[in-house]
Amino acid sequence: MKLYGNPLNRWTALLGIGCFLLLLTSCLKSKNDYTPPPVGYVTFFQAAPDQQPVDLYFNSNKVNQAPLNYGDGIDYFQVYPGLRTVNINNSNSNTLLFSDTARISPNIAYSLFLIENTTQQLGLFLLTDSISKPATGKAILRFINVSPDAPAVDLALKDSTAFVTNKGFKGFSSFIPKTGGQTYNFEIRQHGTNTVLATLSGVTLSSGLVYTIWLHGLANTAIAGDKLTASIVTNAYYSN
Image (cartoon, rainbow, N blue to C red):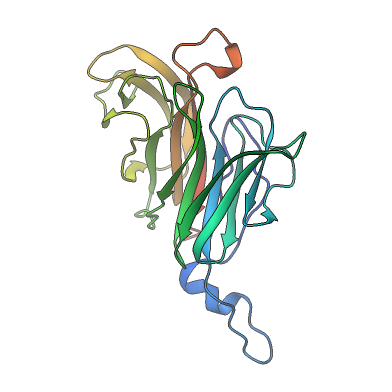
C-alpha cells in the first residue's frame, strides 16, 4: 500500500511516503539490520477561509515546502509518536497564528485539518484514518464536513438516495465501498432535503484506491473564493 493525499481537483500535493505499517521494518534496513523507530503518518488540509498563506510545524520542524493557501494540503508525512506541538504560522511574516498539541501513535495514519469556527477562531481537527484494502474491483471513500456554518448535510449520487447522512461541522463517515473504474457525480445536500449545496461531477474512482471527499468553505459569504466547496483527495493506493 502507498499513502498519498493528492487531490483530484484543487491542489497539488507536496510530499509523499512509500513505506507503511508492516512494510516499515523492511523499508530502511542497513547491512547492520537497523530497524527504524515506528512513526505515525499525518496528512494536512488548510480548511480555514480568510487566512493568509500558512506554514505547518510539528514541534520546531517545518513540514511544508511551499506556503499553504486555503484549500491546499500535504501528502502523508512521518511524525514520531507522542504528544507533538503543532504550530500554524503566517507564511509571510512567520508569526504564530495558532498552536495546539496532537497525540500521535505509531503505525497510525491521521488527517489533520486547520479549521475555523463561525467567529473565525482557528482550531485543529485530527481524525484517525482507518484505512483498509478495498475488495477486488472496489474503491472506498469517506466524507468529512469541515464547513463551520453549513447546515447538516448528506452525501449522495445525483438522482439517488443519500448514502451518507446528517453530518454537521466536524462530522465524518466511515470508509464506504464503491465500484471501481466508474465515473460518479456526487451531490452534497442539505440534510433531509433535495437542496444541493455543492457538487463533484465527473469523478472517476479507481479500483484499489482510498478517497476522502471533504466539504469546506462558508455557506454564508459573499467572497467567491470562500464559498462552500467539495474536494476529493486520494488517501492510499493498493497495487493488488
